[in-house]
Length: 370
Image (cartoon, rainbow, N blue to C red; front, top):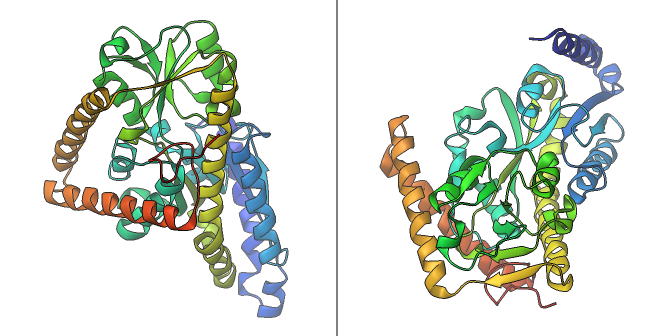
């Protein structure tokens, strides 16, 4: 551990000590204590994701009557995307938001959610991701407390110069793709580069990469609409990035039970839906930008081409199943989890239709009309 990290951990420990030192005193005094939690997030401060983190902080403070205060650190100012999980474990941050792919292979059981499983959009995928963790609670998360899982919008193929109209067009292209998104890009014939999103714009503009496997929302969130010329829709294979919010276990357990219950109930009953709505809306914003900005051409593939992409997706899912079986999770158990995910996708898509919620992607029954 570097000297900087040691100082950060010591500082975090002292802050936690100050918050919990009164635990042995009478309840009246304990109830007057306030607790400050640092929340690390790599999205830029103006992004909708960061604004929702700020909303989380405000809601938690209000619901706990000021006893829990959350300090938010956006844009990687406290921890970068790949360092967030370990930073939370060490106490540099008490809460953190990032996605599975930045620590690819570390959360092998949960990475099932990053496979091209047919998620129609982020609204459905976020609800399914939350339910998956609540159902299976993989032990790979044991060194933190998982607040919730949630999901990005579905991946499309972005290209700066070359349109992708057939599977063969991907050959020779270099695309930004991390984790199983990168694996899928390579299975489709491209070369994947695991570039952090804050660096993606420069890499495209300087032609270090030809494009990205990424959702519509990044056209706005990360300004990729300025450097991307073509978007090829492949939402039918439905691959997402699975995001998570985790808490430092010592800091979480240092909160009185009634405060933990308040936060847990808020996440379950309100915040998961806010996450789903946020991801849904930012992708609509990106899709609207793509459709209305004449510099970005949106390409729709034929059903025959989509079937070819789906065949590649099925092979990737089979590879994942074999690899996880080699790590001790039986093929039968993996198949059961795949069935659970697909059943919940179908359930939440029906629920989306029932509620009349529109999305940037998915079947016509839920697709927004611009």
